[in-house]
Image (cartoon, rainbow, N blue to C red; front, top):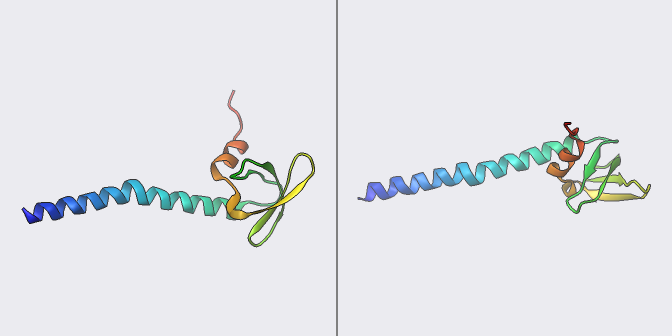
Length: 93
């Protein structure tokens, strides 16, 4: 009886790892790689929804130029991977 409970507990931990922890770690790694690969001129969207082009890349920040010509400095963690990729993906007709 005790071995069945241990087996069930181990299975729950394994399922939890593969469905909860592993995808989150992968998403964080993808976000980090995306931000590190950004360069001047790339179009981005922030997590707050601001659209613009990167005008300057700093150590921990980006200077983003908006369509109006206004420039704002954002922390690198404020760049949205999903929204920026959607912005840069060509529309299929």
